[in-house]
Length: 91
Image (cartoon, rainbow, N blue to C red; front, side):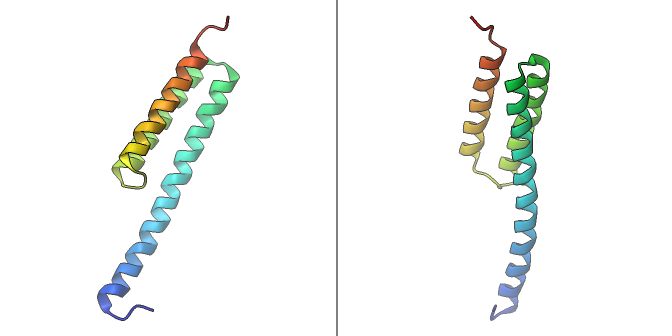
């Protein structure tokens, strides 16, 4: 249990942040999953659309401090690479 008023306040803030961060991460994972499903289906237009949505979610999570900016950059890079491979003609 917190001993001081400031520690109690920090606990309240941490609870709010934890709920917010969980929501942002869940939304991020959902957008990445939708992108992967679109890429697997082979629909280039849908893949491009979902890539843009996923990149936006990742960048937003990084700007809010939910994920590290290096991790965000890595995730965006990997998704973009996967999108290019999905759009490339099969030979």
